[in-house]
Length: 435
Length: 185
Image (cartoon, each protein chain N blue to C red):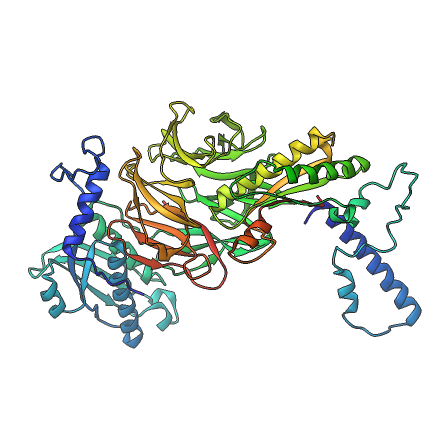
């Protein structure tokens, strides 16, 4: 389960210079390795950290088991973040030359060991300390603990990541996607680490292309009623589904504006697929494209001022940019005969998209200026589609059929590590990472 | 499920229930088994038996509306699907020939409504393929209307790569799946 970090420091530094170039395209000449430009990102650093067994003060064997589960979750979260090399004992810490350690205490009976809830006064204390000095840098207490051990561990690691890197932790994020085949695909949601798989829809039809609202309260998605496509809103708190728009023809590609008050969609109600801004009542705010071609896959820039989208106005699908009024249009991709599914990174600096090469679709990363194109995974991955960024700007979830069936995988775009997120026989497609 | 299918299923359910009642009346209790259940789930392909009596009617006056098209698949009228090249939604000359024949049949049945489904092969992205399927369906609709088929007779939708006709990751399967398919609305 836990990916091994084969990457050497040299490779990390190489990646660092690559990304450095990509993030400063105005200053850096294409291809000239101008390292030394100031960059305050710590994303390419690797922290060495010791995760110690938790001290268990009371609660018996069950508490010991739970403590081990907490430790294991912390360990995995740190690995998944991409920023850490984890040592599990002092010897490993020595080897790694660890600068940090995580220590913790679990005390009190756990809820399932007692009969009355008020007796369940277990408290989990987690600390980040310098190593070997053990100066406390972060001290968190969680409790009284219900069955939130994993969530507590996730929360703590988020705090650690944020403190050390300045980037948000992603341990409490989730991924919504579409699972199934033929006449039926349902929306599912899963934790970022593959736990807690949950089905959202059961309406015996195709449900596709989900998209989180910025406040996570809703998921917009495409579905069919009597053969007619529509975009629907799924209320995450209640499971209630309401129709957003179901005009004749295509109703696709809902992308939430960062302010949560409007969406970009593709509708063909005026003849051919065009991109519109619509409000939460489904009313058109503005039509942004006017062409006889296919105009789809819109995605807002993180600031909500620009839009990257797909158009086949030149005969092949290519990525374009425009502003929020549909003006200042320019073509972004020139390589490849088939480019689609652009996903704008949370920092606004990178775009990952799907590019067809041969019979496969590959993931490609470019800067938001269209420069520094690089293919992300080797051909053994076969077709990779529908990339979606994690809020940390480092991980991308996507669907790949490398096993013969589309399943979801997570890619660390900095180091190139991958891990499989979903399992099972049915195809999983169109993932969307929660903000 | 389409409206037509719904209607025909409702009919079948009614038939099934009627049959049940008759059987019960005639044969007392009979055998209490599931066959009654299966009766109700008769697949839609089977023309619903007694309800429809459209009288093949060469008189061609006013055939019974609504029920008609639910009973017969477009292919049974001689309507044929048309196929496309990869990432293409323009009609080939072959497709146009087929559509001309389709248009003639459609004009002969001014009361019928047809659903044009756009389909794609599995290559490419889910979303783009939905749009591509849409363009294929629209191209077909446009051509049919140019041949005098009233637009109100034509509905369209896209299933992209979601409902392949042929399984397999090879050109012959892909070619089968790049099509505009005619179905009951």
